[in-house]
Image (cartoon, rainbow, N blue to C red; front, side, top):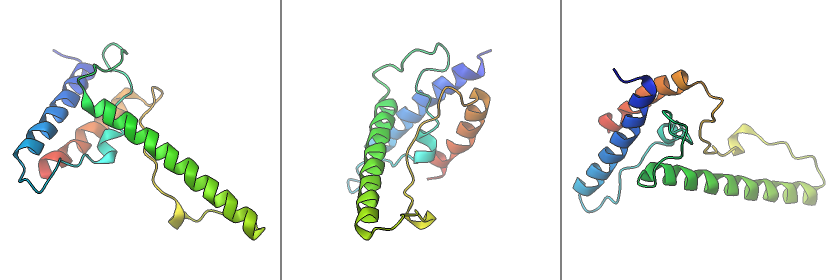
Length: 130
């Protein structure tokens, strides 16, 4: 009987295959299936079974890495603009919740695996519903 880490690992490969299959069979007006960021954030940085890096063929990992990099660059750029604005206005800048952009960040190794796996089981169902 496979352990939860093995099942989770298999599920990530199945999700990738599903996305590839769906993007090939969609009408030509669509380019690809959008992957919800809530789902992709649950992809661990390393494989759950052996703590090694994901194989290069797992495109979801490359996509998650790139999305996180771009998200952090946008956050730094926004923070720099806010600091400049605060300096020009000679006021203390306080961020309001309406101006906060969601940042894409993956789960860390410190996040409990069972909790991540439970969330993944719920989040992966959105692919079937869409």
